[in-house]
Length: 157
Image 1 (tube, rainbow, N blue to C red):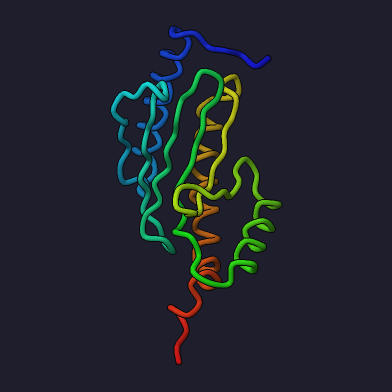
Image 2 (cartoon, helix red, strand yellow; image 1 turned 135 degrees about the vertical axis):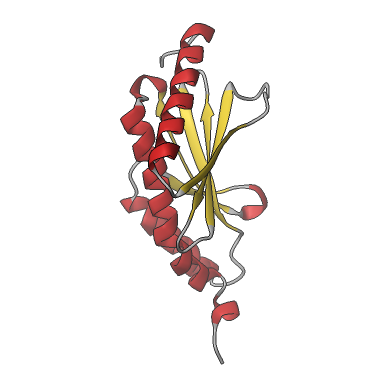
């Protein structure tokens, strides 16, 4: 069975995540904002890391502290309008190359990038890897996926 953290150990991790994210923001100009979500019974703590993108204007990574894992996710794009087979084939092939994250379908069939790690593996270096990797994966896939899933919008006649 995985480790179930008590309130005291979760409070320690919560403070550490606050500190680590603050330090990241101070060192990385691509991070525009770091905010905390309002308290919610569905999760212990939740942060939003908003980053300036190059291919996608903004990427917001939601980081959620649970009793056993730290979950992270970002919205990539709405559901594709066309070329569905090619689009989803591309997503699945990209999943094969990703480390620590995977593409998934969420609300309204939108595309998300998600992952989680056990809390026992959480440290500053791992949090930095998570934020950097999610950002990089979105930057790498955004335009190619748009070109497939919304091809007619970008076609020049």
